[in-house]
Length: 306
Image 1 (cartoon, rainbow, N blue to C red):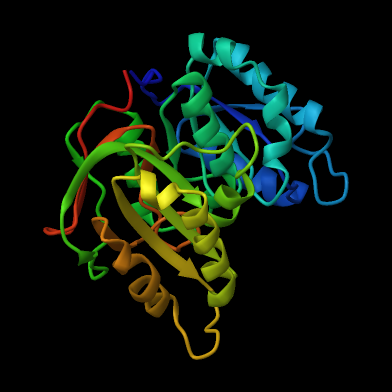
Image 2: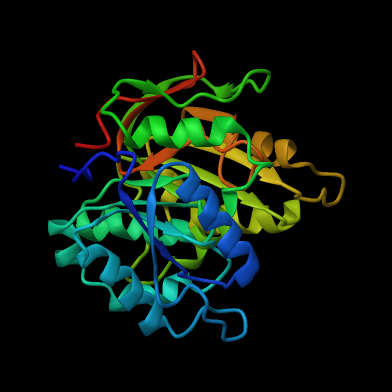
């Protein structure tokens, strides 16, 4: 049984942490101001302004920052600055038993998804592939905030994970499947293979998306997942977009989906606007959902907050 964090309310404290790559101090401060203007208090972690090359301090520092937010009873939502690289480095230093007893809302995407899946797998905690601190700016569409806050402020099951208007979902392989959702960023997901933090897809709905990769690289990643049994074990597949992914050998991302994933015969839903896309649907990792590729819907069928 998945653990659901307490629901978020305006006035709650948001713990800001940097778990992977750094962001400029000026940008961070501007984004924090927006969070506070929305009606939340903020607590800034020690890693937030640290910069050691392409990382925000040592893995131990970033992990301790995360655990400090877990152990602070005032903090209700842990909000990473951004993803980038290096999030997997903190995983050996987290206290998963402690996290299980002090559930918090944790959101993010990109490299943060390895943390989201690990928290579900090791602490039974429902997490949220959704907004990060970097998204708190004027150019972010209201849809992204509505998707997240409607998911974490009230128990709302059943809830459709819907695209914004004029962005249809497609069901290239019809059928239905019900199970917990796992997955996220394809690159990070593949990087976890062969480690203690490899995601178990048995009986699960597998969601994948990526950005800034060529289609032949995406093929290599999908083939790696197939060889590792991840498609064999899952009940159904949801594919997000591949933003800024270049055509390779006259093959598009959609060509790859049709040529590689459709023949697997698993219920398949595609074109979910999420994560690296401009529009970001909130996908709760670990939540029970029904994928209906025939009717092109993805429905969260359990409350994701308590």
